[in-house]
Length: 343
Image (cartoon, rainbow, N blue to C red):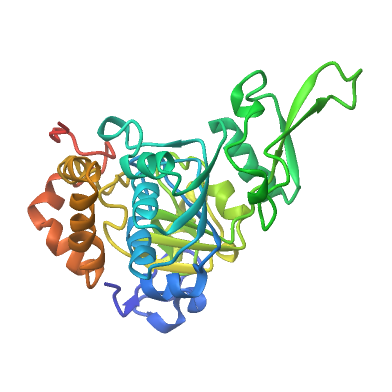
């Protein structure tokens, strides 16, 4: 999947013809899906997945977590879709903190997520989109909480989805705390939101440099704050590129190397969700998932076929098929696939 060496050119680069051996790249951070999951994702841990609904979900790593049968995860996310639904549907998740779980037009609420909540199979704490963003920001800033006015006067603030006995063991003592502004007369109320500091954040990016710099094209959603708040960070990516290339436009880079613990190169690693400038979401796959996810037996069969029965990511892509991957390939100017039948 990776070439044995890269030729790099430009100011401060190696001389023409010099190469950078693969074993020197990324300072030991280059891993397979299985290696990254085994090292950083453990039973009972707090795991964050990046992306938004059907955009840049780290699906290759999520399938790897499911295949290892990791259990009792405390999953935290901003507004995730396919990754959330697969992790919940495979029984990996015990508790959720989330603002929204849906696949857009393919599922206004993800089907396995909804079933698990209705059946009491997972505990859920719901926050607003703004609140979840701020909770990750608080973790990134290394402060225990952050104030907001989001949710005042609503049941999001007034009610908690977690029973009292669920609090503790990494769960805040209170969902939120409402108090008067201590710098004024106290009449102006604010909501104090507890910080989120995941054990590991998992995101999918378009490119990672040979030195570990991460570039995300398009909207970053809450991915950057999630990574800065986490103890460990796994970045799956479409391709590894020379670090010198990323230095040409440094303002386009998203994360520095010292924040990244594992780099997992997996082309189409967000499929069936989209990865801007590389490929669009896959409506055929998402419609098929929509059809089977409603039914327990059909979903179990889907898992056997698409998750547990997959030997490698190359095997997965072969199963999707070259013709289907070609149809969702993005136009490199527009960033998506014009003319794609999205029905």
